[in-house]
Length: 375
Ligand code: TTP
Ligand code: MG
View 1 (spheres, protein in one colour):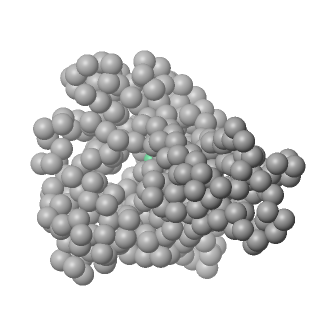
View 2 (spheres, protein in one colour):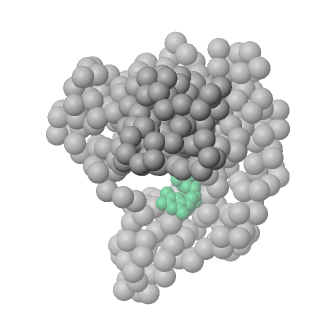
């Protein structure tokens, strides 16, 4: 059984500002562009919870945030403070929090400046994981004077949705048998990767909650979203097997083979290419990736002249057959006059995949990007 926790600092940049400038404490704080008395361009980076009560949110035009703050001031509510932000300070605080989060976890992953995943499976049960999370929250409060929200679940997806469920200073534990009941009433927007456009698209189809999304069959979802529909289907069921890891990402995975004898036998070369493609695909999955966009083949001729050909797809490829097909298409010209006019025998071939994607990356597949627009 996996037990995963997700930690997300509350109103992080704004909370750090309050922590280091006592005069700001308890006041509405907005970090972002210069509002220039309502004429400013640019957006809100974040707002503390006092400013959120005025309706101010991340990514909102700063001019609108200014008007909301002015309206509140005219109602006699506390005046908001607008700050440009001190990113070096936020980075320093983050670099002190991450080691606290990492301590005692089987593995950890820094997901952003204010977010981390913790693998707590070795604790063995959710009660111990909950106690661990409480202790960590207390430690961060004591050492940094900051609050965070945490979620615990049987995978990263559920843990992340849970940490966002009660903010600020929340702790939400979702045991495996509770996953469906927890997710079902929530809006589709809580699913990482579902932005405003996808949400609107789903609303138009009458799909508002995760329960409703779960009821949509896989074929319909892939019809709407292509390959990403499969991930959405799994997410609606609360499924995810993405590992918790800060591991360095290999940029490519490849295999090559030197033949016993130099050859131009098409049947033999293509059969070896198929075997190499299968081996590469196995490693791709074994290293936790789900898809790739680039396939490269390398050919070394008997005279040691070595050539590569690559092709990068706009849409990620996710199957062994797709890798095999792409490799063959790239190799065939080396077997005839197109890439091998002198009909040289081949000594070695290689197959490699690049632009690798994990399941989480598929959230940003072109099908989705086309819908959401490039960020
Ligand atoms: P979030 O965790 O999304 O937001 P938050 O910590 O401010 O608030 P919450 O309590 O809801 O977690 O982002 C963390 C920090 O990243 C945030 O303080 C500012 C920064 N940030 C950006 O720079 N751009 C953005 O679009 C968002 C959303 C956040
Ligand atoms: Mg946060």
